[in-house]
Amino acid sequence: MQRNAPALFIAKLLELPQRVFYFADSINRIAQYHCHIRCHTISNEAITRRVEEIRFVRPQFEVIQCCASVPLQNLMRQRTLLRQRVKAVQNRLIARSIHQHSDRAKGPFVPVNCGALTETLLEAELFGYLKGSFTGAVSDRRGLWEEAEGGTLFLDEIGETSPAMQVKLLRAVQEKEIRRVGATRNTSVNARVVAATNRNLKQEVERGAFREDLYYRLSVFALHAPALRERRSDIPLLLERFLHQATENARRRHLQFADDTLRTLVAYDWPGNVRELESAIEYAALHARGDEIKPEDLPPELQSVEVREAAERSPLAALFDDLPTLDELERRYLLHVLKVVGGNRTATASVMGVDRRTLYRMANRFNINLVEGDPEAESL
Image (cartoon, rainbow, N blue to C red; front, top):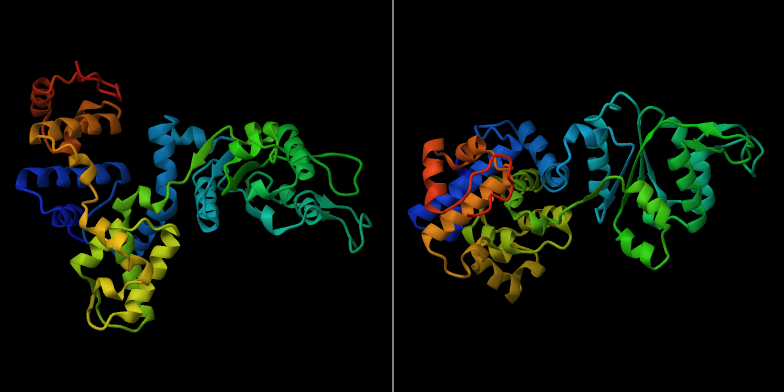
């Protein structure tokens, strides 16, 4: 992978003049600044790790650092976290990553799918039971909450739990105590709780389907996983990895994407997110007639008139809808970089590829107040 490959990709899509190509190259610099990418030739194993980071984990840390302004180490010490509107596979990977980067990494990671069990089974699985407490209970058994002692308990699809189960979960989370089925005494527990759901729990609370007190107890820190259409800049690297896998699975020789195909794949909204993208590449690898994947080789849903029209429109077209001058475009970009790096002047100069003296001249030309630590960098 060449150092400027992402920038070349963007520039090829937009066919921009040289001065605006500098803008695209700076976008690449931002990506490197945030993700600490080493854009030299990298191994297949390194690509795999980077893809997994892009697919599921990096968007969460960006939300934490850029939107919530909470240091990552503080998040890792939280006892309860809530992630909303996330796909099942993403849920577990993000939860496991949080666990592995926390001070509880040496403890167990115990996932539980609340939506896959009935209320009685879920209670027995989470809290455990005593011998003879119900038919089939032939011996005492520790629950998964106790198994997660000193580690992380991951409650997936918590929005599917019944009101009665929510009461028991609230008591366990708040009091840090559980009671096995059939027991008369409580057992103290010490496990971080990470909960996830694909529902909007705030709306569920408003319509009475989810307990308000449990919602606020869990949402000490809440994360929202962005859809793939909200992070289109990740698509090219995902395409590289998925194409490599699909080529091997289809026992094909070297395959590559035509330019029109790349534009189509970046423009499509991907309602099925990463899984749909991976499936589409597998489909294309099987249907491609030559060494180049063309738009007609893609699944039918990617060949509609709407998708073709979107592909003809630049992924950065919103920046140019009002036909700004190049000076105005440069001003907007400077403000954006200042906001992303929290107003840090040294980091801003590094991302833009200029020295601090040049940065000050640019700020003075655009009447921008360079206040250290000011993420808004308001104009004078």
